View 1 (cartoon, chains in turn green, cyan):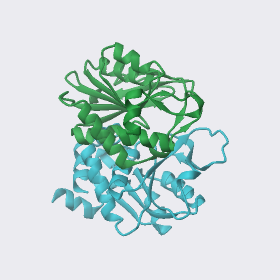
View 2 (cartoon, chains in turn brown, purple; view 1 turned 45 degrees about the vertical axis):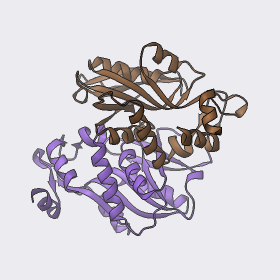
View 3 (spheres, chains in turn brown, yellow; view 1 turned 180 degrees about the vertical axis):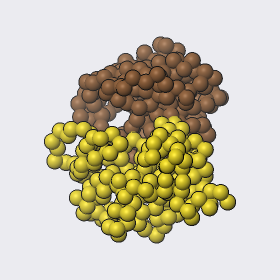
Length: 198
Length: 198
């Protein structure tokens, strides 16, 4: 998505070789029109998948996910993130370790919202080590539902999450693939870079 | 909003005299089309207010807020909720006590996203004691910006948040006003009830 990559170039702040801050249009302030277009792009990329639900994690995943769900005309579920979980047997849970925050969270989804015949599109804002996506996939599997694919707003291609997921056979669609943040500069995977500068 | 009230009647679960669970269409699973219509209704109710930004709190406020922001064609900012705050001087902060969770959170908004000439619409999913809305208003005031109004999806009219905010002179628009949850039954303020049963 060209507009997204331009926005990353213009407003993204490279904090280190591995951290890209996009607070002005994704993680804190949001550009609703861009989010709508992101949703639209996901719908196109997963066309024909007969998706019945969209699944994401609070908080930053909610906006792109609801825009996809709106255009797919299916419900959105957002998994809840908790540091400790009060024991409940009516929820699916999995553990997600955040390398950025260096903490483990338990994510949960109520059993009533995922059924064995569901075809679930996973959406998230970032893909780095793949921990969040793998946690969501685990929950979908616990429900015996099907993973239709994984839609990511920004993939850090220099980390191994994308490879992990693709090697597992999942269709991963990342709307921006950042190949490097070295020297304070955002580089995209070559094909995409040409689009940006075209 | 008639559709919202019907949904509350059909799917809302009354957990106690003060707790209404709407996990199937607002707080965990979301109905994107209903959220779009909620956004549309907010836009109508605050017409002519020249709103420049929408402000909410993560997580459940994000979906209705981004749908309002999309149709208003303005950015959305979501305040972050943290239990403890690492000292930073580039953020506005205020304290929000949650009676439901019995915990105090600090909410923060980066200074760069609110300016003195901003006219800010506050959106949230629930209004009970008004703590969250008052916290957001305090942040808007710290930025010397203007509060254009407060848009709420579900107001518990039997708690005092709505009165507090209206007495302070703010335009509060609640799309469903629940007057009682006694005996496991949802009652709406009379005027609205007629609409539902009409």
